[in-house]
Amino acid sequence: VINEVQKIPDSSESLNKLLRFADYLILFDFEENGHDPNRDWENWINVQINQFLSQRSIKVEKKTKKGFREVDLKSYIVSMEYVSRKNSEVIVRLLLDIRTMGSINPQIIINAFLDQLAEKDIRLKEIIREKIILDSQENA
Image 1 (cartoon, rainbow, N blue to C red):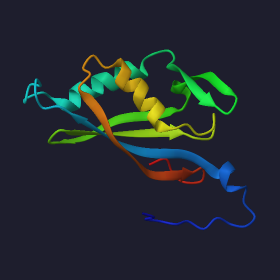
Image 2: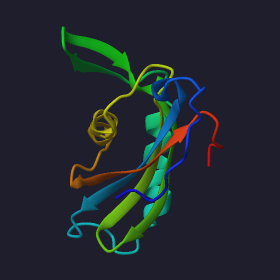
Image 3: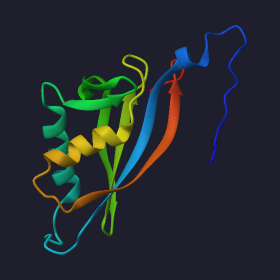
């Protein structure tokens, strides 16, 4: 679904050079069984995000056309924050820099995040790209 379109002047740089950020909503699903129904999910997920982002580097093997290479996911992540919780779903916003190092599949970042969690019953439900932000736009 396209919600907004912006005209780019003919004289501007190529579109690829104008793309700056990709903004995603990440929907996690967790099993209600075994969890304290009074858990402060906002605090819990924020602690997990802070631990994830506080690492000096977040290195993973990324598959490329020429095989595998090690990448540091930390250089792609601009921000990651709790948005809301509804029933057994937790929503997190992930803002990625897609210019500095090129684009990356957000699933790679989410898989690395899930791998660090002590609780293994939280699962990725869906990744929704909310918007792509051009270099000329505000980082909102």
